[in-house]
Image 1 (cartoon, rainbow, N blue to C red):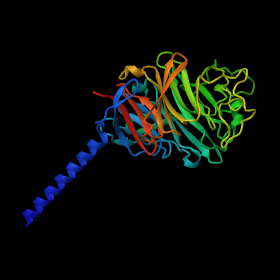
Image 2 (image 1 turned 180 degrees about the vertical axis):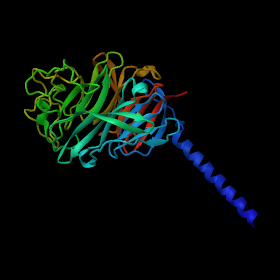
Image 3 (image 1 turned 90 degrees about the horizontal axis):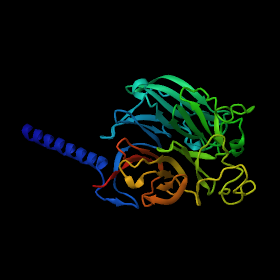
Image 4 (image 1 turned 45 degrees about the vertical axis):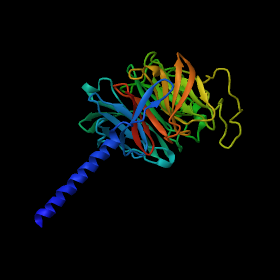
Length: 384
């Protein structure tokens, strides 16, 4: 009888191991179905699961990646091959209020990360009644963050809702940060004494560049690079021109794509191609005014653009210099075909999936990674 029970136990263990292995294969294996888009043929792979609102992804030199989750405030190291997640310790106190869209936003590493270990994070601070954004530089060692240095805190703190911004890019020793208008404070986007509704530029150590456009304007905050922006959720550096591109949410309609240049006013809320929620003009109801920039491209109706990547073409030559952005409202992956500073064509991928695509990141091998709310990370790989 003991020998029989022992045999049954061994069989049960074998079945459990087999089911675990099958489950892992389902999670990390590529779909057998090839997808043919306008300029590429690919498979979709699920890389990892277990996120709420995966906001950003940054690859490390060892091939792993850091993934931030806005809603939970977790920063995790992701093993790309196995999907294993390790929580990073040492984060500062983060304002986590999902009803106002607060939390942990972007994460970026310094180009010399292998030597200095520097990680830049963007997060919400304060309270639901008076909140703002912080850019912090920390040192990552093993799976812990130490040596915190606050580089920037937006001011004034405001009672906001959803429109934090929080996208960060590194370019030639500078950090560019997007900030939203706080939803209730559209007028601040035109106010140079406030950080809201702007793109800000600082040195990677927090110093203010002496050639910032408003540094000698009395009362203006010296970090401001450009202004007149509503809710910027995507920011990317063009791999060839090194121009900084951004997208932003319009109100009801009028989502925009812009090249972000020093000192430029992008118009919000004076001009917009959108309207009030439920209908009605915003301000004077105009779309153009002298001295205010026109968008390079805009969406009517809104798609709700999120993270952005301008693709290099390494794994998918047909997608070279295409701009990819997530869509939160219409739930798809959006591709814009670029010719210099012109948008020639738009393609919408995965409209049948119901995915609120939150970020897009090109991997070191040229695969395209993206995160979806609720919440997993997927990647597109060339079909064999």
